[in-house]
Length: 328
Image (cartoon, rainbow, N blue to C red; front, side, top):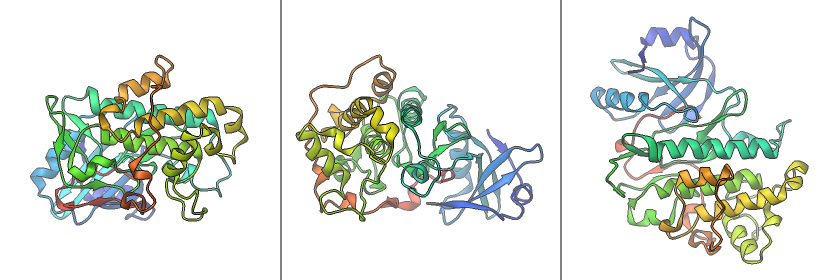
């Protein structure tokens, strides 16, 4: 089990919850420092509708997951009405602030973007294929990818995750996740690991193109990134959607276009045609090539598709969602 903290311990560590880092789906996150100098991120859970027994069971499950590319759960607090989660502190915040915020002094270069994509893939491959019970994350997006001092990327926020036995090929669940990152098969409410791979494809596109999947500040023709990918893919002009604000990205455009083709492979409407995350890792490491027969016709590229209208998480049955949500 992760370390158990008292509420007073965490109140002291956060200086009475003084410095707020952000808000997630289930509560607010605060910066803290333990007595030994370890920096932490403390998530104060709110309105979770979950009993103590279930909370402790989930702490144990997530506490037993250890991988460099997953945010580490250090401990928890379970005292009367207080339920808090303590995570490692990630100094460079979430990925979205680096790829969407044009006011930042530092723009991510190609090698950093490529490494971040590989890090995310390794974290997901571990969840999907290496755990005793496979874990479907169900909310992969830039806000849930955190960066440490050296821009190592770690998957966070298991607030909507589902466990799958190794002999299960799919799981039935209520719709959950974030519009814009939801795979087409969510309409059937029976999902596989491949829903995460679809979301990963959208994130890869956003990293390489340096923009949101839905950007309302752009023209009608270019505000939907998936529709733009469809058009440029069919015209064999993928180079047109690479992040034009970075000179470094233009210098590595051949590699960047290969990365866009990998994203398109992950975005295939037919989930059986999407690669496993272990295959994605091999492609990123140069041990395999991207599938050549890729369709650039995406049903979610339609302008009025409801999955492209927002970027906040949804859950049809929020009280059943896991409360283990890492700092955003």
